[in-house]
Length: 236
Image 1 (cartoon, rainbow, N blue to C red):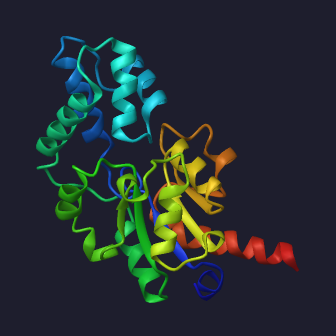
Image 2: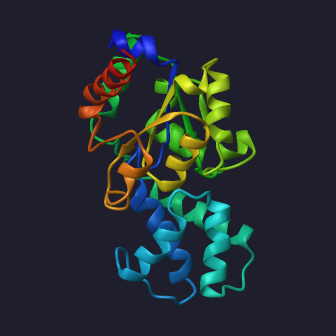
């Protein structure tokens, strides 16, 4: 871990699908908007996959613009956003699960210590409930940022650069944990290294856009050590 500390100023995490296993919540919250308008699309169906390909990792306002266009919905995107947020609030009443190994990994980086933050495209109206339910402030203190804080959502680099600035970190010495194409693109545009949390949506392309990939955070320290050992060795 000392080698990591010597090479890394800060670690920035995406949230949904990267720290919290909330993908099913958001998928259902979005599909309810269609179900309420008699548009029948089942979870994990080919039609649902087609929606995910266009929207996964995007900010909620952008997702709703896409949904309105694709399904010719009469409602304005702002109304659709509020419906999704309301649906999510109801669904998030149940226990929220962390991605396996995250809590232990975060304890390890706190011991070094390496500063950390969240940079998420989660809608700011939903973020407080997630922070409260998962007690994310106990991990990150005040360093939990949404696209609203930075002005632009991913794939723009602004959010990650904003988080780095708040942590007094050099972007080139930051590493991002992400699970979406838009997050991978944002990390690269910010000049940061990126480790993918592998899933069914990114398994076919994450290697082309990130520095490494892990299935769970149980692999994170070993992957960081390998990554920074490789970098150091390449300079020798």
